[in-house]
Length: 513
Image 1: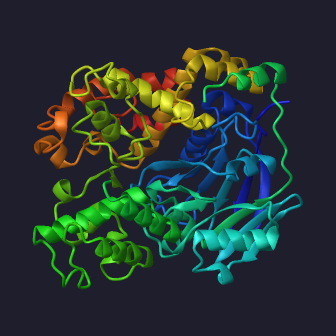
Image 2: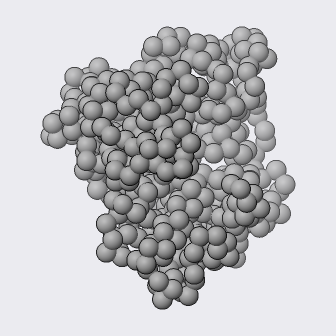
């Protein structure tokens, strides 16, 4: 008895075939599950410089090792691929029931490859995997679509799907399940490029039985549990309707508004829209145009970095992005640990790659720059472990690594999880392998950067943060690379790869050192 299945389902859309495969036990020992194991498969199976929209790109859906057990906050699911927005290895994590349904179907991962010859819908039931025509589902928004799938396959059906934005290949299209979205990095675009409208599962609920049920049940019992709100809520709902990443959409809209206000673009460039601050109707119109790839929306649907380059504008100043991924609401100039974490993130400008909790709590001065390399390296390792469980980092923020260790031991019986230092080493192995993926794609120190504004334009009207700017990113990067055993160019050293037992990467990475 254990809480991982040891199996994955591999779906070939091109051939309309599927097969089950065993997941080696050592993958769990070395990468835990979800984000960690997904990175392993992506590194091993994707060739360098592969176009993210190539049918050979993989879309991996996964559930954490503690998912489906009844443990609160651990049944989230993860989607991973090579991102069409950033060109990096990527993962997006979200909630809803679909993750548990993956495990109920008997799998920890679903690897989707190839491209269907027509709009398709894959349905998994207790007997088989069915490849269905989805032409009648095209154009449906995620809520309509999921309801249609429940009517077709039964009320117990859970699904993931794309909206119009995914069909139209918006680079930051989301994947929706229930009321939740795996929003970041354009995972919905990858799904759309595969002519895949939805994946649904209808199987009996099978609660996972831990290796040591008595101890596990005991641990579960004692677990730790804008000014215009209407505009924000409606804009968010509209993004969900079309299947758009709300963060990238919001930043792209702000990008267009600023260019308009500075006279860089005019109404003739915006399909007649007056993009003046406070024009809510114009913002709503842009959301629709982006999702449908109409007019200026087609340009903005590429993301701020590509849009700026296409317009002949230097993206360094106006495009608020890192590695092509738009920045979230957390201001790097006001939280210097976040500045470093976002800059070095292997997936781009994400606030969920390593959260500097000590700076949030006030234990560490958030304005100090020097000396944060090691602490950010630590929180990124910790986040990699949490994403591989998959733990809700908000709802379960009171759980420490000792508790994670106890839960994993009770759930799986894997002795390697007893050592909390080893858990952190697993986290480091995950981010190091992702770094190797990106190095193979050509990413270097120059890409561990911030938008120029963050290093040159002081914050205004920001309370205690007024006047703040990131002054010395280079020193922060040096500290971070040293803490992780990377070269000055941000490439893992051969010694570090050996220490993390990533022997399969040594030959490739040695060519770059």
